[in-house]
Every structure is written in C-alpha cells, then in structure tokens.
Image (cartoon, rainbow, N blue to C red; front, side, top):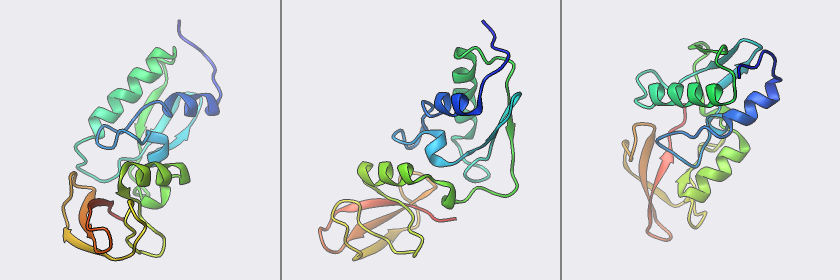
Length: 150
C-alpha cells in the first residue's frame, strides 16, 4: 500500500530505526544526517564526502520508507552546508559514549568514555573508521575511539 500523506514526525520516527552501518548504536536521525522531511522527500547530508557508508545508508533509508508505504518519497542529497558534528543529537552523544566512543565536545576536550577522564592521548588520527581517531586514556589506560569534530 502506498501512502499519500504522512507527517514529518512520523517519517522521523521511521528513520530513527535506520542505523548507521559503522556505528550501529546511532540512527541516521541521531547522527544528524537527516536534514529535512517534506511531503515528497527526505533530505540527507553525508557526514563527509567519500564516506564509504553513504550508499548503504541511502539504501537503508529507501528500504525503511518503502516498508512504511512511502515508495513515492524521494531521497535528496544536500551537500551545503556540509554536515558537522554539531548536528549529532544529545541522544546521539549519550549513545556514542555508552558504546565506548568519545563524542565531540563543544570545548574540544577529549573525555574517556569509560572513566570520564580528560587525560586522553592521541594514538592515531585514524581509528576504526575514517570518521574516528584512536586515543588512550591516561587514567584508566583503555584505548578508545573519538568521533572526529568537523
């Protein structure tokens, strides 16, 4: 069945169930890549150009929309303004930290997601995915990824 009208909050609820393939605790809504929902389209912005997960995310969004009867709703990619970590929701920050990834802090501080210490040391600019850097906590000694700010 194809739906002809749906409210934006209903579409956001559907998309809250679409998870990032690289950070499965985050939905595309938590990540802040869903920019806008209109009657006929969902506008998304990739986290960065060349992100290997972009196509998988678009396919997952398409599948979720289709399963909800929204086959006619288009997915538009919007590149300007570019995505920023400021768009990660407060819930997204909580989920990242609970998953063991340090979320970006407005102050720029790097806090260990395990013990909360600010005694973090950069080990590598490249973590488990291109959007994360690898750190080690000086207090508890644990390694952890930090979501790169941009």
